[in-house]
Amino acid sequence: MKNLTLFLFIIFVSSLSAQSYFIPKSSERSIVNRGGSTSITASIPFQGYDEEEAFFGQGEYEIFLDVVDGILDNPIIVLDGFDPGDSRDITGLYNRLEFGGENLADVVREEGYDIVILNAPVYSTGGVQIDGGADFIQRNAFVLIELIEFLNQQKEGDEELVVLGPSMGGLIAQYALSYMEQNDMEHQTRLFISFDSPHRGANIPVSLQYLINFLAREFGDETAVAVVENVLNSAAAKEMLVDHYLGHLADGSDTDQDPDKLLPGGAPDFRDAFQSELDALGFPQNVRNVAMINGSGNGTSTGTSGMQVVSTELDLGGSITADVTLRFTPPASQTNEVTFFEGFLIGVPLIDFSADSESSSETDGVDAAPGGTSMISSALGDGQGNQVIIDFIEALDQDLFCFIPTISALAIENEPNWYASPDIGGIHNSPFVNFYIPDSNEDHVTVTEESAAFALEEILETTLGQADLKVPKIVLAQNPIRGPIELQLGQVAGPNVNIRILDLSGKLLMNKTILANPGMVRIPHGLNSGMYLLEVNDGRTVKTIKLMVR
Image (cartoon, rainbow, N blue to C red; front, side, top):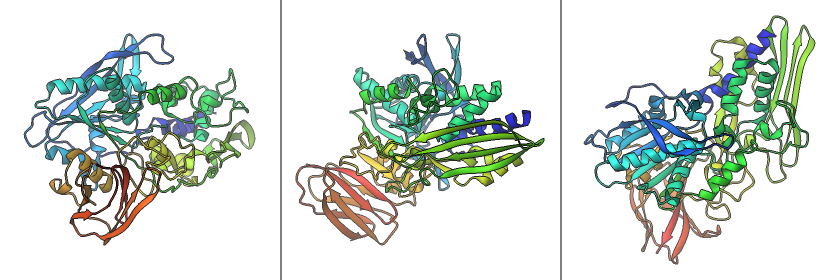
């Protein structure tokens, strides 16, 4: 049994604790002009849903001054995401902004902006140890509020802040900025960039959750159980996951499934409570809210609903074998067995477990939906020389799964179908006024040349000539507009650019193709005053902008 316990602990539990499961690994290259990290404690306490008292959150930050004047006068705050155990330090947070041989943080520092990284460490307060990277999103938001107020006091000049929230960091930023506005606190922030953040929830295949939990509980390994409790059952995971195994258990059981609870459901007393609280706050109103996401905008799925993820027999040594089968959640209105495990000793059954899943009539299961993706193999370190793990990875039929659905990353509230192609501005209204949406699904919080260009256009509030990046450049010169639409074109993918204008109901008002000659293009329109959607397609990406006509 020891071999079986050890194998399953390494395979499944380590997959949750590895940082690469949620955030792609970044390089460890050195960073110029570093200072040092400083601790910060929130002034506002927070009491979690299952806590008996309130605690003051803590964080650590480091300021990377610009390389132009070296003065703190134009701060951009970059936040941490889900990081149980604080496995990703400030260096890792900075370097995850790399793209195409460059780094977004380096580029903006060369333009006179200061980067401020806020990390969520493990800390003790009031005699209790708190894992900041997996803690309540609200408590982390109060730490961000403390940092915002500190920076506004310390900075020189009157430039407003920019906040970049990758992954869970986007929820922290949304909560903090909205809370400040609703409580008459000055945030002095002009721009919020949400980066593939789960505004409507995140996903880890429930099939994997069932298996991880069952094996940890069944074999009673204290370390395995601790990891399940500290990661999968952490406050942040229970607040974010739209389908959590705890929402399906029979009363009084840690592992057994209630056959009447097969539809997707979040962790009881956490998921719905958090989403309701976040929805009540809404998005900040005195900030420009934009989003760059990693999920496809045209409905491209990540696999197929109900598909087999893996079905294999593993030789664990010592005459012990295990049959493991995992599947994605099923198509709409269907039920399937998502988890099956059976262990044998010399062919004699030792232990078995299975769990089913049902999808609603409104949508196929979320596992295969369009969205920022995560990979099982990368979470397992490609085997790390362990032959059993290598055999498991080689047996995978499906490595990718949807981690942050496109619908969630765009904060679309009224679309129950995870597979819908977002019609921004129509019935699928998004709170973001500008977006970068790729055509194909990308690894979660991966910065590409295209998304970097989008972020830089928003941060610099100008054309990208300053940044000298060889990336597609499409900039709306003025918004709102009073005359012709003026587009500044730089490098684009094809010889032509297609321009479409739609009203907020989705009705097409203009469809025009122009030559992609670099420079300013003026487009007469004849539109009445109001809000419209401007779509610019260069043959590789589609940029959608909310256009205001005065």
